[in-house]
Image 1 (cartoon, one colour):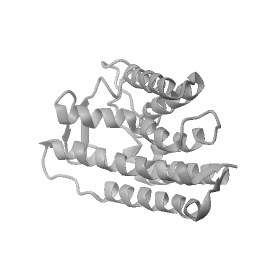
Image 2 (spheres, rainbow, N blue to C red; image 1 turned 90 degrees about the vertical axis):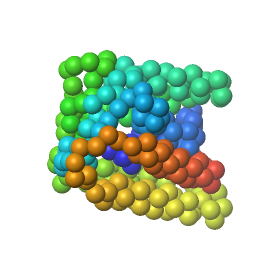
Image 3 (cartoon, one colour; image 1 turned 45 degrees about the horizontal axis):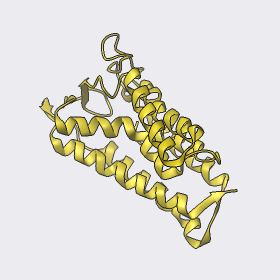
Image 4 (cartoon, rainbow, N blue to C red; image 1 turned 180 degrees about the vertical axis):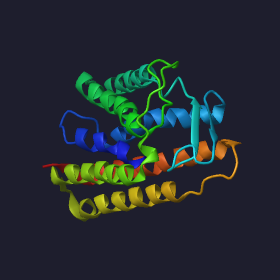
Length: 220
């Protein structure tokens, strides 16, 4: 999934004890932010394999530090500690940490068996990327259902607050459409660093939009 990962962030942001939406958008994708950073640095690896799954060509054969369950929990703990240091609240930290770990649970639905519990077999994944007629509606329901939930429990602050959720929705839709429409390679290739940079760019754009939405809306 891509934009479906933001559903837990939207739900968590409706709690008055939670971090703001922009921070939760970072939390929702922290596992992948770490993965693409490690891909650029050569710490973790993937290759592009034609029809690795029906929906995308990613052969994610080496990602023990980010896409193991214990790794996701570790990133969640680090995020929780950062939020505690910044906000002085263990509750906010725990909420943010839970959103980080939700990434692994949602990935479990769509990945082919390439996720692990602790970096070694068994490999896990239900493989919904091979069933687009299920994955696409599910992803859209997660993402835009989460956005609706957030908007229904907040109120606009000024004119910008009425339009910011629409800007976020458009940004999410456009980036997801690009993700789905990207052509699959014709041969197996090592993933270039550009793959990592493009992923980080997309996450940065949506985190910035999430930050703006949080500044223009308040809990109802």
